[in-house]
Length: 256
Image 1 (cartoon, rainbow, N blue to C red):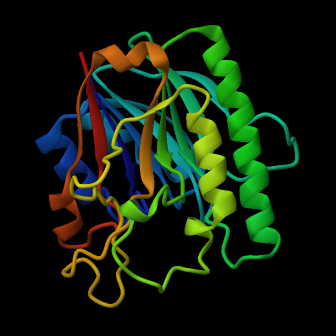
Image 2: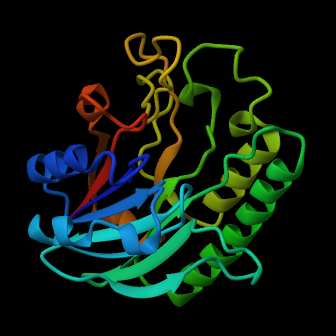
């Protein structure tokens, strides 16, 4: 089973890109982020015609998350993280697919920092850490996939000082991600030096795609029981070079 995560950066604007990738890559499960569409505007019919059932939670102009499953309908288990009933941002959705719980998440960016957006980012991450612990306690196979808006280490960003004050690389952001991993999750895309860095995001500005000036923001975390089933992981970089592409590329894992 291949499970992918893809920050699509407007699902309707980039629907042709998404459909072309689905046809070529044929992932079994896809976690989408940044739909930038209201719930009623999600392109359900086009995705169904492509062979994918879906569950989703939209938000006008911003955010939005979805889970697609090839040849079947995901079984919705949760929309939104517990812990803050006043938080209406569409950033978390969870479903059961082929015996595995899959979550699509879009962590807050947190910029500018310090400030209320960074405070919200860290509070949201605390809620994610708490819910992830609950999922592990159930002992079921789980994949937490999405745009975490965290660069875990210096190896996960191109050589630069331009991000030094960015929320993506702050110690608090990295510590939150590390605490999540310490629960027992496996970061499937992690590579250690001297292996080449793996990037999933290239900003549109300053010719960053052509220069391979990327960051690793999109992560797939596997619960302990899934680690023996991990057969491979990677990034479909070619998608970032397509006309009208998202600034992210799809990342994926293959489970046996």
